[in-house]
Image (tube, rainbow, N blue to C red; front, top):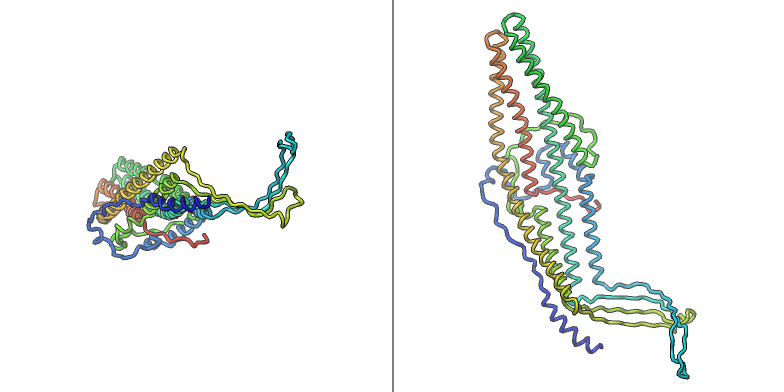
Length: 466
């Protein structure tokens, strides 16, 4: 037996070279150059905690709480810990499994007596010691499974990063929307007060016979329309604050106090590095790349199933026919090498291999899809941000012109030199433009958030203890 193993094992090891491994990563075209870099501040490094660029301490504190207490992040961390445990399990599969062993056996059987007759008797034995089994990894099956577990753990870590980025971006979005709603609410309340002031002026004009009664009705109708916007904005603001509480795991504290106002950021002040490098460093792209590696290692492990498997079992301890005989004189050991080959189940092994190859093909296609989606998100966010800021500038100028026009029209009307209809039209246009400007400023912030989320801009990792 030993001589046979010495002849067979080297040939099997050499044949193990047939177990191939394809870890090739599909390539993707670079993002088209559309002269974005000239519109942004230049940087050579991808920073962490991108929201600090917005220079809002309250937002910084809320996101810090969310990263520590958000339940989606906690679940992603649990999945990552489970993946790390699987690595340890796969590593231990490559080592001998040693277990303590104690057994007692009692049974009856027939046997031939010295005189040739058949007799029946009771036999028993006692066994105590250490038992070991070890799969000798001739064709790398266990090694490939361990590497697959390592790659999937890396993918799980990337998914954790992706979750942290998504939560930070979502909280920033809700926070900015709450700020925008607060600005809109303040404008709506100003609008109500403005209409009330207009009503007083028109009412005085009606009393003096200088103004028609229908103008007073028009002003009152404008007041009622302005009032309808206030409760809806208050409701939306409370919902945004409630969402912030949920995202922070209920740790946001009281956020009913007025949120600080913020000016819309300009693209020229925002850092933008190597967009193509950031594309491949996005957490979802990294995770998809690790899934390719994991599935490739699983294909190699399934290929190894087509070849013989060598197992080694052994026992060292004591063996006795009576329990009282267990001792130094009852020492025993055995070594049992065994070779298995699924000769009659090769169809099953080949089917499993085809399945693993299909999974590997799927992972490569998924990687290409993730890359294309990432390119779309980056290009779209850059395009929306730059174009939106042009619209924002035009709205800002329009609001300024309307404010001047309304002030002049109102002044003329108060001194009796202007028509009420002009005041009414200017007031409606001004209030509408102010609301549009507030929404545009909020949209500008949302575009900044979408840009850095699309770029996969870093979120500082927690300490290992967390």
